Image (cartoon, rainbow, N blue to C red; front, top):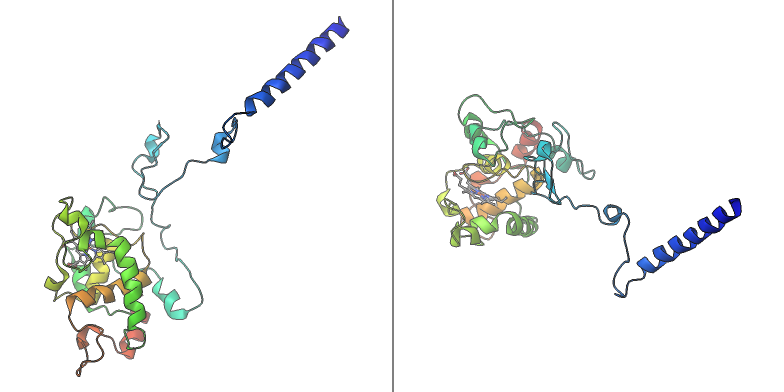
Length: 258
Ligand code: HEC
């Protein structure tokens, strides 16, 4: 009886091994063969802006409204490099979200989004905030190049390559109400920062997509569309003096604003 059992189990073992070996031989040379744990080879990719309450047809209601591009935990500071100016630019933004953030892609009332009590006061105050990145003859080319790089991936589809509000989304009718930068002559640099950071009207917040240094770089780039001579150091008088910072203002604003 014992012998017989041994023989049977040996037969089963041989048969099973053969089956496993055969089943992994698939005629397609590009096939990876039979996978027993596909999730370990190919974990479901978590992509930005995707509602990942639904992954592979499985619905997880508690995650349903969360987007994968979330803000970092409240009061954490992304830290890059050792450049003091750059690091101080990464400190939490001192201005609260105005009520304008209410319509910014549902991002309002998330942790850390403290709405200011009265309508748009912070936005008005932001008018006086200076750009901590000073535009000089030496760095302007580099700043505009970097601005163009960020702008073309994050802004151009709405605002247009020429900043005239005729981006692809406007042209094909997906979006409406994108302004021509030329018509925004009265905005302060800080307000542009504020609007990009928290969003304004139909424009969503960008604070979780680009960091403060990138936003201030974009402020210079947007100014180039707003003012013809912006960043043009060949002209006799100082170009758009109001929008440029003196060194003193830069260090002031770094201390107080950032
Ligand atoms: C999805 C389309 C869209 C994208 C993307 C977008 N914007 Fe806007 N933007 C708008 C709309 C619409 C307005 C008008 C908002 C209003 O005044 O109600 C606007 C307004 C602005 C303003 C004027 C803000 C003010 O205070 O009046 C600036 C400056 C601006 N956008 C810059 C940018 C920059 C820089 C980017 C890229 C980081 C960007 N926008 C991305 C649609 C967009």
